[in-house]
Length: 300
Ligand code: HEM
Image (cartoon, rainbow, N blue to C red; front, side, top):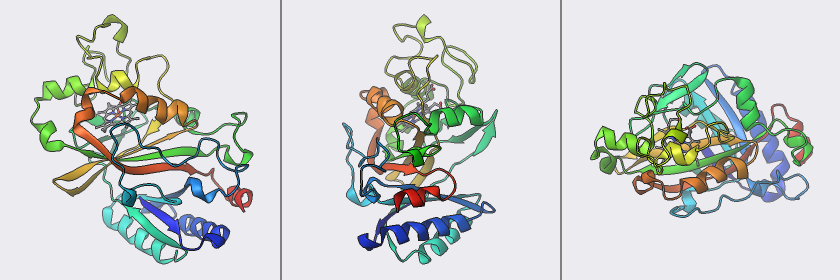
């Protein structure tokens, strides 16, 4: 992920066109790329996605300005770190209109797809991704802006992307037993539920009102208490590793409504048992434009 700032504000339109052209040339062979727009590229409110703002600091966050926000997010993914690195260098070389604000490399160990869901292992040794939908239609339902949502017409088919750089106290976490860790998350490391429900089915939290099996302050119970109404967001995180003292998760999620998606879940997670093991130090709110280049005309 590379967050960029404009070199010259009066060249916003041509700078966005240039970034779009560069992202388009990254063709999906060894690497793929997409752009997401920060709130400050919108000079007038008529075109601004209605929820887009500078990411606020949530209770417990210690946001470092050098790792937060940005006018444009360029995300490059690929099957090898070297391919991603090379593509990033070429892209940045072709974009003198933009300067790097922050940049962070991420990895998805044990990256795989099962039943349509992308899974990976996070730095806490847990499999992540089971809570995501398994079909493209459900992904679009949660993530893509629809007509009639009160958003500017150009945004339909786009998505709000939230990035949170979350430092994880892995040493401290590794001192707990696996059993304790699983009670903090509310799932087994391999995704099975604590009440024995298979990983891709729904647990019966109602049968455990006091949280004896799945604690009330566990991550999944706070994140998604109502099993019939899953939070309308799709997660896709990466692990980062700067040093043994600075490693964690590049949490990233997509939603069509920021308030009902990320923000509602983030509020519910306040005070969860996992809170003392993590610290959010950066990230930002962005908007991924819909495919094609119609959005450039809407903004120009
Ligand atoms: C501190 C870093 C975090 C870690 C280590 C973490 C880890 C996990 C794990 C292991 C799961 C269970 C497997 C899965 O369904 O993917 C999970 C589920 C989930 N997490 Fe996180 N997470 C973190 C931060 C967040 C944040 C910041 C949010 C959103 C504000 C979030 C939202 C969710 C949601 C919605 C689920 C699915 C719950 C369900 O459907 O049961 N997580 N997380």
